Length: 112
Image (tube, rainbow, N blue to C red):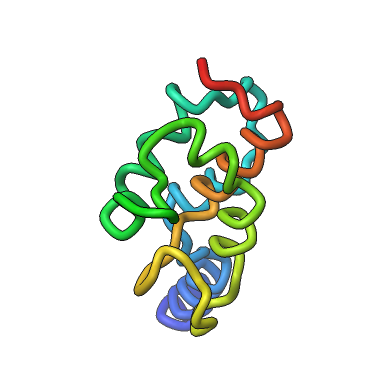
């Protein structure tokens, strides 16, 4: 009987567990502070975009370039995996990074 209770208890506990990491869970939390380019967005762009988007007409190396391309950036980072226009190529931003960029636009695209 103890073995049966142990097996049932284990099964219930395993079924209740989520396989998501802390980062994935926290990625969906609403952002309450104001997002700025220098404080929040610049590092995301430098880490994920500048390798391919520098230099040239599609460069994303400074505030003005990112700001003027924000609608295209948001469209491309939100495309489904497998879409040839998905950015960054061969990867994906985390939900938290996408939320930061989207909120930056909603907050008025401030630099500092």
